[in-house]
Length: 178
Image 1: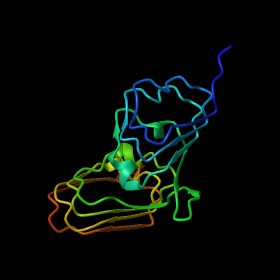
Image 2 (image 1 turned 180 degrees about the horizontal axis):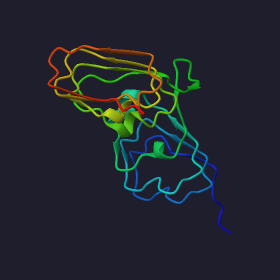
Image 3 (image 1 turned 45 degrees about the horizontal axis):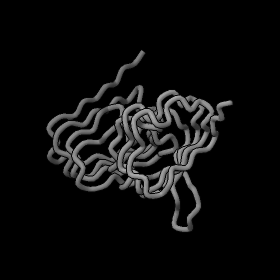
Image 4 (image 1 turned 90 degrees about the vertical axis):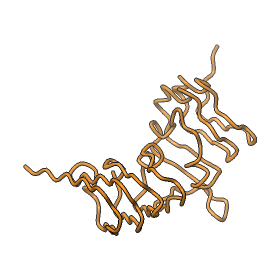
């Protein structure tokens, strides 16, 4: 008889979660991923419909650097990281790492309890759908090309929005009303 686990812990030292390796684990509710993982292969988490909790043992900077050909956060509704006391917490505020140029929506949008984001000036493009669920957004000076802001669909919960306009070439504002 086939046994399908509800909790999967990837071994520390693992570099890649291979293509299709966890695909179809429909009973899996939680997965723990070590900081050593640098790549999620294609369809690695496909059809993991009951995946609710993702525990990541690295830093947010490490999370953003993972090559994601599939993203478990497309299924999971909770994202946990270790705090300074080695307790699992859900981050509500992040400062995006310097040096990246484009905000990868798959890295941020699927952090369900994220409420506050700070985007440094190294970013060149920020898609409009990046801001779903956020209450506080700060875009620092230096974002140089395109910012999309859809006030209706993706920014309905925003309380604070700080934007430095120096050097921005294009801002798309979408404000539809009934």
